[in-house]
View 1 (cartoon, rainbow, N blue to C red):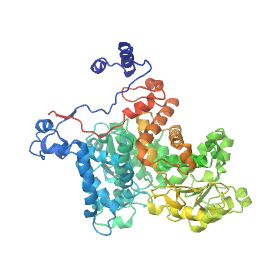
View 2: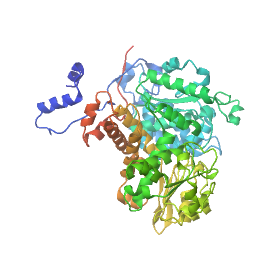
View 3: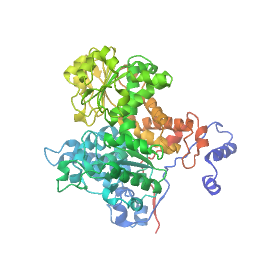
View 4: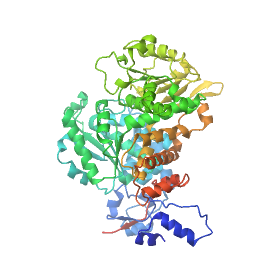
Length: 624
């Protein structure tokens, strides 16, 4: 039947109906979806050592004897054929032994040692690498992603061994349209691009920022099941303003100051035009662009290309899910979210992104009209490096202007332009203190003491800045100073806190990995032309509703990362539903938009699951 359907181009829905007619004893309402990412034989054009040196196809000792003969590998490998499970067992045993030996000395943290070992496996055998990562996602997500990836980026010029991804630089202007054809993959589904200007909270790391794009795509593969042969990490090197790197003789990037203005935009424009000319259905995620460009580039491209900015939109979605979870933890329905008083520390791209998303969410709950948006605006107090932002401030950032407090409002509250964070917390007595400042320790003892006067029975403290050293406070500080009744969340992982008497203070990691893989996968499978605010909102609300009422009552507002593939499946399903609802979906491969629309509540998650790549060794067939 499968060959028949291919020959005559029959749709999957028609094949299902024919199958049902041929087997009337089957449940007439049941439909099945064959995975696109199945283990059909893979045609390769290389043999012998070339195969062993290609991480996409190398199986190491798992090559069968038949394949060894077919691919001229006999004698090039030890004779014992091992299963993938045996290979993983050997690797994990070696990992525990080697992670200490590969350290450069006392200055090389254990986490970086683990990254080195995993990276070497990635260089040799991608299938095994992703098997290990998926099976141990809780342990290794913090290694391939935040917080360790920040350390990797800081040291990338010294860690670089094997090229991974593509580099477009200011010196390549006029050449990018042809350069994209240097990448060997004919199909690319997901691209993560950075210009290295604001890596996590570490500042301008120049070309070394490629590490964040690689780490993000590792999670797209592990969490969303994006085929690793269809991902592309990209570094756009427009120079660096990091004086240390400009003087470093070992630095791998352009040693000149960053382009700015129209020259900068011309480079990004050329890159976007080039990648979408070769891969028109790709999705581009912008990552760690400095605030001055993050919003401008998002607005410049989002209605023309399939793209989003994870720092602006992904961080906002995860924060919204946490804020809605905090409302649930207070024993209130999520519809009460517009009543929350929220103090936000930080007005960069992440902070403004969260503010805009939270305001939209509140306004939608209040009727989605002008009055609703004005009412929602009044629930936020934004504090940046200069203090409370009010309409009295000169030269307000245009993106922050909608959240500037009115003079008559702050005078009634006993506040003024530039009021300190502790003053604002004391006077407002907020339900939520949200940190997106990238300033470690900003939530001082005085600030946390002020939160004890919150009008909420369960105040929420979100220290969301990455990496770990930039967290506004630790969970130990929050629980010990404010009390054991709080809800705590952070951007980087912390351990839960023992509160005594058998109580646990839960540290919820508001990690973007809960959303961006599902946003990307849902966009890919829906074939949506763009990524709308509605799709992003659907993703956030899906994550907020994922936790059980018992979990949120106990202060757990984000799930364990061990459930990341199931979380991603649910988020992707929500994104597809919204894309269909907004008439943005165009379908994916054999599933067109009309068929997507017909899938019911059980069938749509099954469709998503069956199109998630799983690491397994395919049978390799040589063809010259």
